[in-house]
Length: 93
Image (cartoon, rainbow, N blue to C red; front, side, top):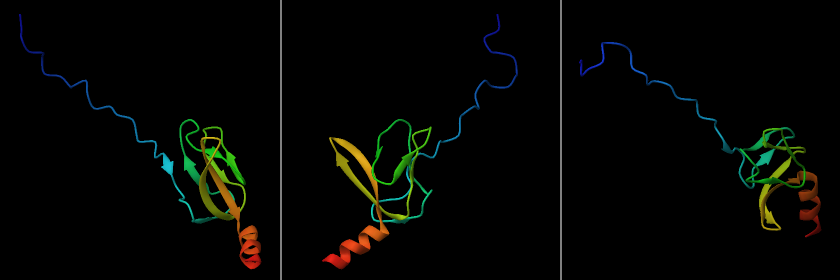
């Protein structure tokens, strides 16, 4: 009996590509409508105001504004504070 396999190729050498998930726009950054904020599997972050959720749970901006992370009812939420709203609040102060 041979104790070594005959000379042939290995059965290794396969690996899938990374999915490039994670937060793409951080709190305080300005975004335009349609920009991706978070790429995720499952809802680690939930959509808040002016944020939409794609079929693969990607969160994206529905309006231009500033990204804001927070919590609501114990869930992590991503909101977009509209630049128009921020201007009105700043002028009121």
